[in-house]
Amino acid sequence: MQIRKVLAVDEIDLADPLFWSRPLEEREGAFATLREEAPIPFMKEREMPDVPIPVGPGYWCLTRHADILEASRSPEIFCSGRGATSIADLPPEFNEFFGGMINMDDPRHGRQRRIVSRGFTPRALGRLDASVERRADAVIDRVIERGECDFVADIAAPLPLEIIVDLMGIPESQMGMVFEKTNVILGLGDPEFVGDPSSIIPAALGAGSELAALMKEMAADRRA
Image (cartoon, rainbow, N blue to C red; front, side, top):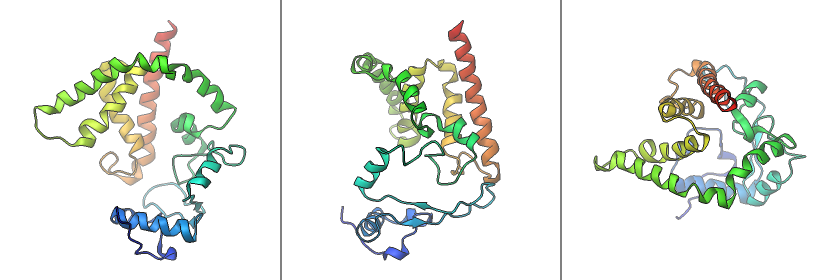
């Protein structure tokens, strides 16, 4: 790919949605310019119309690989626990409810990681091969006779979710609900999933509460 540097460094605004609609060659050119001239730029946050979340002061952007590695290896300096998946400063209860392990720092993160790490050893993953292959075959079989598909909606999105659902032991009957509610939570800025911007927070809380209720039901069943 031939990158194109069409923006001066002071014209690059990563918070502007129009920037992300530019051709990939121009976006890559903009990041190359930042890495060369302003590798850690400060970007102002933009107000989201009808979304009841206050606009924060802005954020620093790490554009160089070495700086990203440094941040990821220095949890005593760089915090994930106050939110790692959103530019906006969300209320603490949102980070707790929706962020999970992503929005945790050590030592809490370490405790959670040790709980789940036993399920991801090479031997444990080897036992999942057949299950993953079966899921992949089923996903493809659902669309192959049509001769065409929306790759994201029909294959790329459902395949990893169905694998995770299998790992968690969620009943097949609940898969549609889990798919729908996780799309709402992960796609809050997408009108396909949340049409009215003013309903983003109620939609997120509603979807999260339904998923939490399913987890509590499953936990009670496991304990029994």
